[in-house]
Length: 261
Image (tube, rainbow, N blue to C red; front, side, top):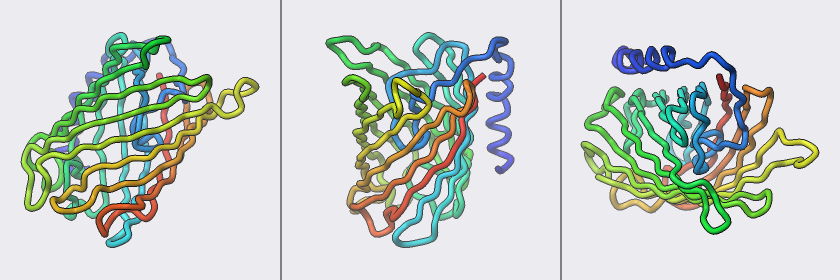
């Protein structure tokens, strides 16, 4: 991690430590966060006052080009009722070749707000607002993203829809100035009601390519979240992109851990 990233993250880490709650909280494996373990999430924030420390390693074995590996440290804090704030700084191999909004070492700030809990008539609804600050390698301008999230239960099965749009603050070369992304997913608790330690998640997604004139990256993912203890959740996922540009992912994979305090 370069010095710019360290200086950018340090004040936010200090803020989180100052807000650290005294009691311990349980971490819920059924609360789905982006990239834990696949690229979708549900419409619910972590409880007020809870802190989650999450970390994962994600690989992208591309059909053309070298396999890219990403280290994903993240802090999540339940700042208010039905709202969480997030700090993240992905670190990637081959940082000088990256295109699109995500650059290695960028400081990522996010806010998720749930404005409707699921009722008989309406699904759970949430809005996510994000900003990537240009602290990373070859990064310019502040990139922003807005995502709408819906979650609806059908018995034990839950269905999720995510739809978002990213605006690049300073597109370079053939990078798109903006791109949309849409995900449809389902999640299901395995072993329920005898056991409630695992959640299976599957999704299909499409997103505009990072560069102009290329086809949408379209693929599917499947993942599992396992409750190891009341405060530790493990996750793993696999996926592939079956349509898109020539350097689309032949195989995606993620392993990670989340710890709640």
